[in-house]
Figure 1 (cartoon, helix red, strand yellow):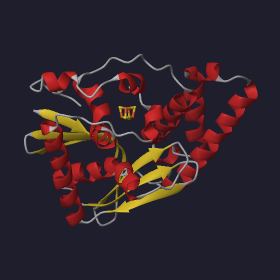
Figure 2 (tube, rainbow, N blue to C red):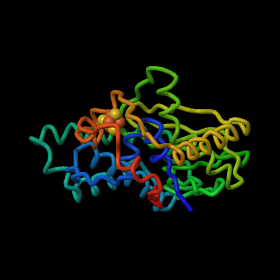
Figure 3 (cartoon, protein in one colour):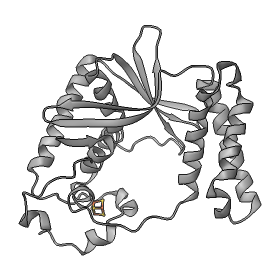
Figure 4 (cartoon, protein in one colour):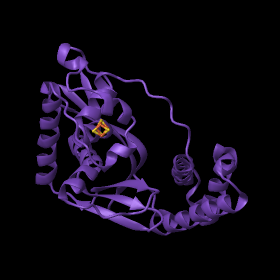
Length: 262
Ligand code: SF4
């Protein structure tokens, strides 16, 4: 059995070579030091998750911001700012984001938060953890993926396709579990903006076949070509990639097993 997540499939589609380094050669990379934006994102996500642990009558904006402050105090984020003013600005940004979130979701009880979903396709398992699923009045589901960054429109159709792999895979997972999915959104806290994708049964079936093809392509790929893009500057394997020649370990040992849990 081989397992593929939205992240591993996105990685492959963006750059097969990067996929190779990460999941086949399993190149060890130095652990990145925590950045302000990473910790900030976790604090926001955790606060929004914990809101729903409270009783319905306690789910107020004040309590949401209180949870946010508690996470902030406990986290290492404070040590990373250069001065108090920097910290204050970031904290205020967080409070605005939570106000937006509360207006859009605060009083709506979710169907599921950070739920793990998997679906077997052929001899493979696709899986993902979905930030939020809401149930609509007609019983259909809406997928939400929270984004703490700012919304930027994609430069072209290909970039759009790549960006939406995550949500499209989630729709396939839920549909595979006999759920009706009408739409999925990236929700941008700061812009209070839903970047929505509508789904039909045909579209989800098409995406199911698409992901199956991608997995088949991975299994038979012997080149894992480089696919340079603006993402290279964020790539953990940039240095290795620059120094590598085309002949890789995998070409010498094509029967090497894939990681069981991509
Ligand atoms: S540096 Fe660019 S081309 Fe090389 S592996 Fe990373 S994403 Fe791919």
